[in-house]
Length: 498
Image (cartoon, rainbow, N blue to C red; front, top):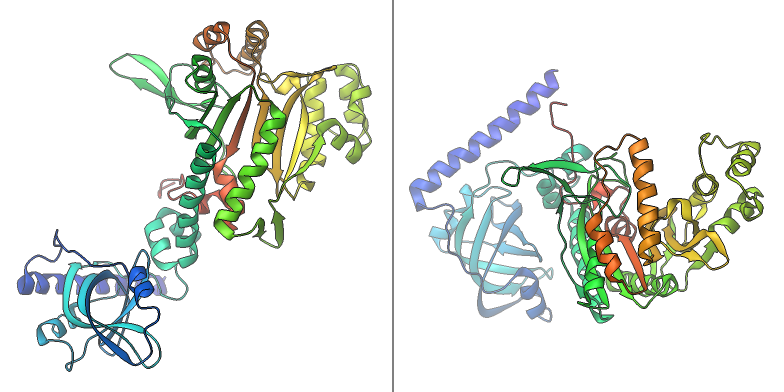
């Protein structure tokens, strides 16, 4: 208890000192948070321009830079300032720096944001440096920075106060820069493949396109319940019906009112695309090209280190039908099993606990999850899913219990899901009505039939391949992040009091 009080007191004292300096600065210079300041280049541009400058050489070039103070030595004679692109050393000495600028040094704390105008040189030790002629206070920081070398050790604080995490952790900063590059890479790749980006509603009167619990809200003006989307699928298919483009995609935010884990966040990013006159085989090849493109754009290679593994995103990926994978792992040949009762009996005989009303397909999928999913470390496509759990996919010719669907796995995680999309309007209606009955039986009373989607399918949707990629999970794999919260800037957190 005593130690905790001491730490709190020190923190309060440090903040009080900064506020005292703020008051002195206001008296001395007036505006401590000026609206107008123009630098001539970023720190990275400075480093690139003077890359060939020899040690112990001073130029006649005067530049203006800005950044946050990360270190200060010899009473501020040497400071390192960082902007988003990198750092540069600032040198202030009576031989090179006017007294007015040197008077600022005692008012500057670690974490303050300053602007510096001065002459560029490189020290004898090879450090690119600016001899300060003028120092401008741009933002006085009223809180101490996290400890320089170790950053923020408390994971909860890292997630709750992401700005501090990025300020003090170069690895975290790089990861979010890479995230931006990956999301941009999705867009550029798909546009290069001829896909048109569209936007569909986040607020929906009928939620669908996936099986999940929605977030519910109320529209005051329309006086009606609405839902945050759980998937954009049904709207994207309506776009395909419209003939706007034969290839459409959306990088979308989805919301599912379900559990939180290292791979699940209530708000997450998906990429969904639909390609007319294509099928699930075409989508498999598209996934392989996309993953190769993203891995290479971030790392310069298709070999990516994740934890203690090296994952190869070089296509083609391994492809295995789900019944074959289960047979190899357990010896159970589901294709030779004819009824739901036989499937449940075979599962129980092999030691699996299954529900009394599970179908043939539900038993197959459950055993796959239990015995096979965890073995799929290298990128792999699992094909031929049961129709029982795939209401939007076309049947496999000659095997009506299976559909033309695949999921892409990596590190034992599902990162992609694709179909040869069902476009038979009567069969689509039958399956959706059956799915609705099952949802109501589970107590999902808000679930409704999407008549507007079914009306659009009645108009005629071309045969198509559809694909969804979990963007956050893929970013985890490409940036060596153990938790989804490490790749979402501001992940969902409990209230502090909870």
